[in-house]
Amino acid sequence: MSLITATGLTVKVGDVTALTGVNFAIRPGEIVTIVGPNGSGKSTLLRALIGAVKPAKGMVERKPGLRIGYVPQKLAIDATLPLTVRRFLNLPHRRAASDIDTALREADVAGLADRQMSALSGGQFQRVLLARALMDRPELLILDEATQGLDQPGSAAFYQKIADLRDSLNCAVLMVSHELHVVMSASDRVICLNGHVCCEGAPDIVASAPEYRALFGTGTGGALALYRHEHTHSHDHTHDHGHNHDHEAAE
Ligand code: ADP
Ligand code: MG
Image (cartoon, rainbow, N blue to C red):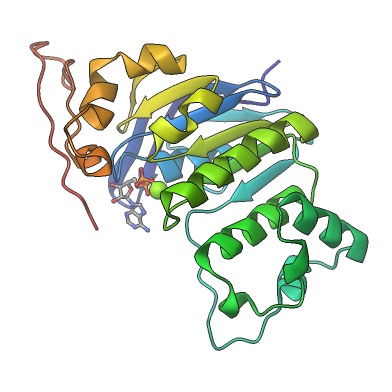
């Protein structure tokens, strides 16, 4: 039985249709990675799955009582606000000190409980967000570009941590990453998203797909190539001659 199933999911963000007709399911213990260019609806899909945005069409079904740990893509904390890691982890409601210590230890930041949130490095901040997501003993851990801003060794270490946590907590993992080459070996399944599901499958299947090679192919400049996402299939219903869609970076 799946933890979450989305069927025919269409989601609007303001006037923009961010997702059209997406079908998705994740099973217990599975590691699924979503890749796709900027603005392709990756964050929107995660938000729809956790119930933070309502679908315009289709539906999302969650296993009753499903425990989800969610690490958002962006979390802005006012740098002038005095807030220790421990207090942050006690929001929005108070936690047992032992639960906080366990989660910090699991995220490899046991010594940071009394630090100011504003004084953390990028990598430490992400680990604290991870600790927060672990506190409810999730059956499904959802991470939205959790390694954004980390250097390559930092992000490789982070993903190794995620793989270890999956093994120790026995949870499923759904993550968005720009670094499929890093997360690939750890993923059971990869979904290439561009407003709809372009291709999906085992990492080696996706790796040999034209969509994937356009994203990460040799000599195309790694992450930069994300913004030039080449499709061999048509996105409209009139022709099927293989259009090239250029997606300009929004940032
Ligand atoms: P991704 O995570 O793949 O970069 P998003 O899910 O954030 O993509 O965005 C999907 C679409 O929704 C994009 O076209 C984006 O411009 C639009 N969008 C996202 N957030 C907002 C917002 N706060 N206001 C207006 N449009 C948004
Ligand atoms: Mg996003």
